[in-house]
Length: 161
Image (tube, rainbow, N blue to C red; front, top):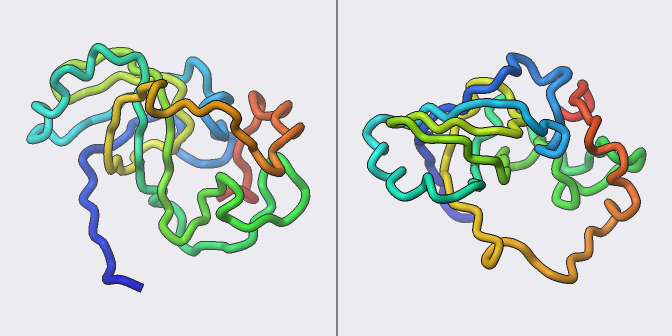
């Protein structure tokens, strides 16, 4: 293993969810839920030209995860799965990755929509979503095949923290 990496949050994600209980799981279960990013003021110049994009990719720290689990039972299944074959937050490096709708930018504040994370989540990075770079053809989704029907109603409970 290599030396530990150190990341400094570039901002905080604000959402209506003070606790993980009842919070949507995945952005498709959070359609229309508004939030905002409070970016570090010193980084505001980095937002130049971002307002021309409809969606952003956020990389953030899942700060409430205390211990990783290498086998988890995901919310769309009843069978234990390897954590790397799931979107579980209980990871060795608890990071979240989300494509989210950009609503607007004012100074160092970014209004966003379809948020599915807890209020106060530390933001590590922002990238513009570019379908030509990010969308893929011929994608296989492993054990998720035929299990996505309940996704739009999925809410967090103790099993998914």
